[in-house]
Length: 136
Image (cartoon, rainbow, N blue to C red; front, side, top):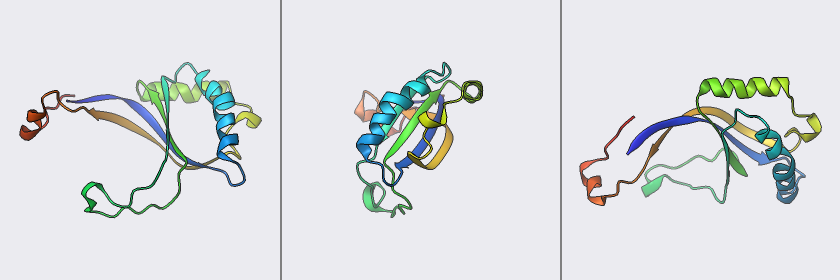
């Protein structure tokens, strides 16, 4: 089943040269995550730590051009774009002090806003042969 859900900010980053992953993660979990979660407009955080790059798409039909290294891809979840706007406004009114922020720690590679569509495997695997039922 397919359903449109929420809005996500996806942020791909590496760790700045000279900083260890252990030091980065200590700052992330002890300082930055609590600062982010202080914002009442952020619904959820998800951190995806990159384990390896993949050279081709599934089945090997197309090569993937890996233009940059990533340590992690973070997800920030919001109910809608208006809530994301309130999230940004809240930080304008309650800025994170520079010594607690990501400058000098995170080497950002991308920051994009996305709408989300999730597809779940049907309970009946035979339904796959006839296509996936969709709903929005």
